[in-house]
Image 1 (tube, helix red, strand yellow):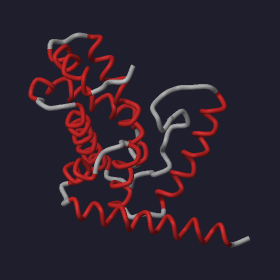
Image 2 (cartoon, helix red, strand yellow):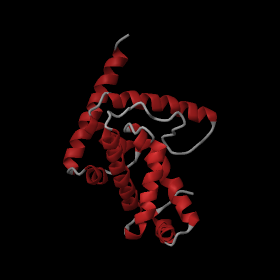
Image 3 (cartoon, one colour):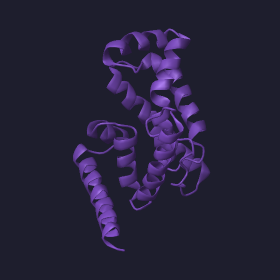
Length: 186
């Protein structure tokens, strides 16, 4: 059962008290989208960084106050910062084709047909992201893969909401132009 605003307060309280069931629920709710975000942004080892993100969350959850949306945003701030740290330490250009073969955009395992279809979509997402600038990739990954709002994305990236809107618009226009052109050519 997914976390809701109504159940989040009790889950957070239990997690702060160290309840294993609460941490399992938080992890199940967010780990898939965190891993997807990290993979789509070229993390060499997205699963490892996801583990590090949740370790940081566990270490600092006692400082968190807010609702479920704020918590999701907070987790993605940690993920984004950890991704930047990883890039700095590795000193390499990210590999934007690094989505793991078992990555599911919705973070859930399912039947073979669904997973195969999602795999095709994932390949298309991977190729589409390669067309964009670094900033555009960040915006689309946070908005579409992580499911964050414009304001949350702006907070994570340290930009104004209007700048995020502009980057998102330019990214979508670039994708539309690319895919519209391809569909017309034989």
